[in-house]
Image 1 (spheres, helix red, strand yellow):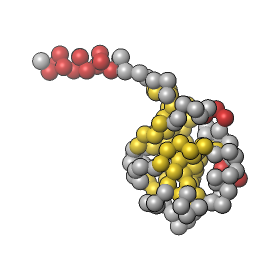
Image 2 (cartoon, rainbow, N blue to C red):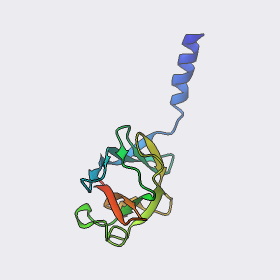
Image 3 (tube, helix red, strand yellow):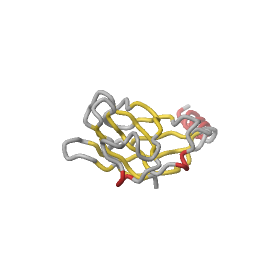
Image 4 (cartoon, rainbow, N blue to C red):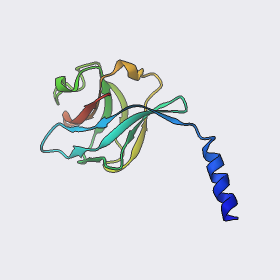
Length: 134
């Protein structure tokens, strides 16, 4: 019975949609006062783009952390201009401060038009960090 269950499980995996990694990277901590680090990737999963934070992701908690994509280079973004520079688009509110998490990118966003992923605290106008899309 155990062998049958294992074979059934392996066969069922072949019917799951495959994930294509479109971009991947490591977050750069913007401030020495803020914990913000870890890996991320953007995947195409069943015709939908998702941002996947790695198990190693860690961020200091804040009341209003949000994920944005920006057309600006990371070096051109700071706390004061993060929501103005590079026509940023809101992706999702950060729901987990450590470990793996998945955030759906709205279908209206063409990710090929963006250069950077950032996490920003809107309430306190504070850039937590970001990474170039590569």
